Image (cartoon, rainbow, N blue to C red; front, side, top):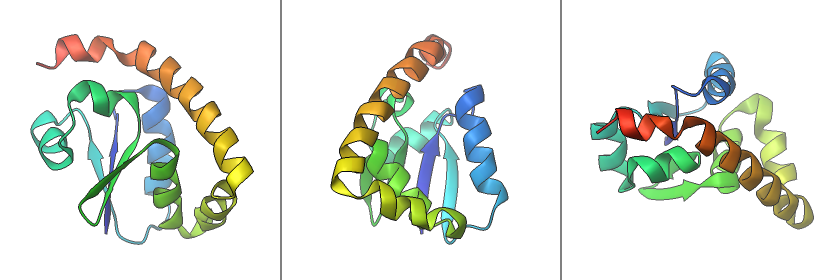
Length: 118
């Protein structure tokens, strides 16, 4: 069982995660980071840190960014192949760079949530 912490208030993030939720998953629990009491407690992360990247909790360990996507995809039969492809060293490093660029954009787009959630 893994726990995927995602921003359900982000239209882009929620659209992608809702797609994953709609397909068969093997042991995935989906947690909205805007449930601050739960998400901050189980991850040990601040709301700002959770807003910055996708996070997965597996075996009590918090995994972030591209590694979190790899873990999540490995639990989704339709996407297990993608977890293997993105794990290949050259592809992995390129994916990290691309993910960080997208993640910065999404963080800037959604940072207003930090002022609303106290």
